Length: 238
Image 1 (cartoon, rainbow, N blue to C red):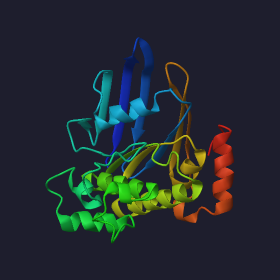
Image 2: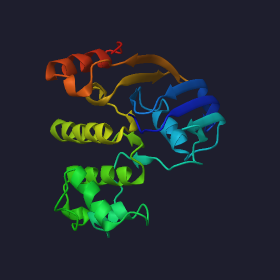
Image 3: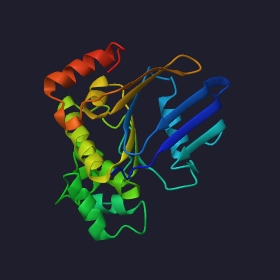
Image 4: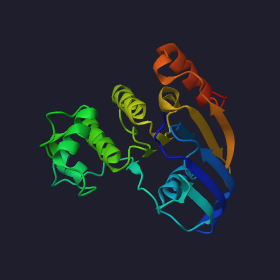
């Protein structure tokens, strides 16, 4: 049974710098769904993620997580485009830094979950770029495995590393029933990970595509992923 948090978005108007980004944008994400947000650069994908996270309250409307106004309930696990690790803390310290309630044992277990057993005492500069992304994912899971917000988490990684990280996210979803909102510039990430794909376009941004991917993640063959990637790249329904 899904243990993720449901998301409700009802934005009547959101402006930035005198430009209307969203107007009458409505979206519901059920618990346990992995939603990929696609669209051109600057359309407002990262802004929407910040609204869901409760990091931006300057809009007309309401955004909720599990029925609670965003920013008032449980803090979501957020993974940014870069790892944003504290350079003076070890991998273990970076995971524990998000909450005093995270014990060393819990932090070690989460790091092991993302494949970093034995790397807990290394500082960020001693970790590869892929390992740093894993620490960032572990930190997000430590904050809230029920709601993960991923803002281009695989950007600048080669496809092999990106594939490894999408597999780690898929494993976390399977274990925790996480609700995930993923922003990506690469439709292959959506083809590998998402249950549902929404594409935003225009100004104000509107939903121009909302399609489900019915095939379970663990049943998607390389050929199917390639076909889905091509369809999504062309703007076709998944």
